[in-house]
Length: 120
Length: 169
Image (spheres, each protein chain N blue to C red):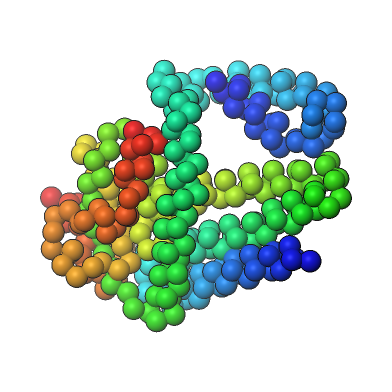
């Protein structure tokens, strides 16, 4: 059925971005650039894998009409995505701020306005 | 306030438990009321204390939904492809720049900072609470931007500040 292929496409996009996030974690030089790869691309990938689950739930709900099993699947996945989107930037920001406070400087940086402010 | 939100969250989590009240069963409903009251009583002194109810305006919620599915998602997809390209080629030019978004409230600034951080390629590192400036780690600083005092907000985060003003300020 065509919904299956849609789910495969979502899962493929999501896993591609998650994999790229892992590769970026290994390739980038310092903590800030690694945070870019490790937190943001994986969020995007996880949104797409969750979208696959939601699509599956909606298709099941439409085909079988089994509300007690399929409706919680959809709502819980949506809530999981919402929590992911809310907490992910906060944790990334916390790690970056802690790193900068403890004196980790960005490698190969062309400009660092924050360090200039701190010196004053 | 807290009671309403807790009850709503409980109803969302238990949707599909029965059929007596549309999708909910009566025992779940009663338990939801009970637990929401308990949570509201415990967190009374910590949550939802602001007397400013501007976030209950449905127009802001409408803008928020439009923003989440429209410009924000497109910007996020574009930036993801950009970072994917940089992961493969390793062509980066990182730096921490300062931007002046021109927002007044704490919530608006939080909203903008979260949007910036969620978009790959930019990461908000710190905030200047006196002037509401944001310090953003940018993975690809454009030529010439590092010499200015404030980087061009349009280049860093596109139209996010205007949306943050509409939704949260």
